[in-house]
Picture (cartoon, rainbow, N blue to C red):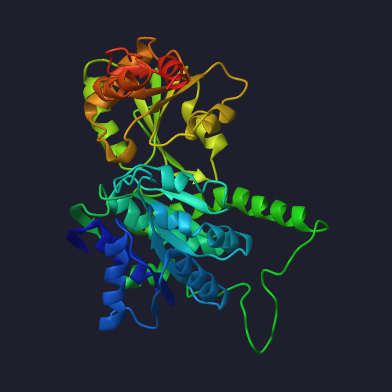
Length: 416
């Protein structure tokens, strides 16, 4: 059914269609509207046989989610930013126990300084937590990915983070096609837990494991992650056949066939990049786009296939690893080991700073013009802001250039 609704309401409706038995919620912007709407559904009876649990913190939300999932019910929660960090101990426990919890991460910057706007620093800080991480381009993609996430989690036996850009998607009103309950019931079977706590047949879950078996358990987690690559593709194919929409998957290519430069982008910036690529193509610039949907597990083989024999690749990243480089770029480099493909990182859109079509154009022109001389470059920096700080400390002046390369930044930061 077509509806003109807020993204958060669309996600709440999608989750409700999956018939969760427990929703554990603590509010933090920008995910709050999702769980608020689910609470309304439970209260009004439109979401039946579901316990909506108000808790006192995000740590409690993940703890109750773990208990509910271990108790044998389909479980959902949501968080963002500092809330995700507060959950971390439980986040690792959920994956270590193999619990198929689905959690929305309405991606938002991590403080300090406090910033409530969007980037990917929260979700990608948990890349080694053992959760699958699926990124969404649009609200329609987010609606569909949440539905697929329950089936993927339950087939693989690992929890899933569905990462959607905070405010940019969660608070945007647009036309969404919400599947019918009959469609989802035919797609997502009634939940049948593999292992759960039953007073009639007592078992222990999460007991201490010593050196004699711990490595084997981690190996099995990694094996599940590898298996998830096939499961994601299988479930995506089933869902696309059901709805006719091109949502989900490991990645998606746009105008890549003859591209001399390929951009790799995650999240809502994909739409902006597509529009600017169309304009560049009309001018004869051969540039394409790879929308990376699954960051964990990382689709190394698919990325290598999508890049092909293209010699220039730029990863547009909305977070980075302090003292190191980007987060996506090193994974792409691993995928392209043994080739002569040049892979670079451009950092943009931190803390909600807008990524415009002009941002994409700058990246393309800088790459094709040989100006991306370092592996990681910050774009759209404001030299006046940098100078105002640096002049007050060491008297260092940043070049008056909108595209500040990493070498110049390292030189100033080392003395700041």
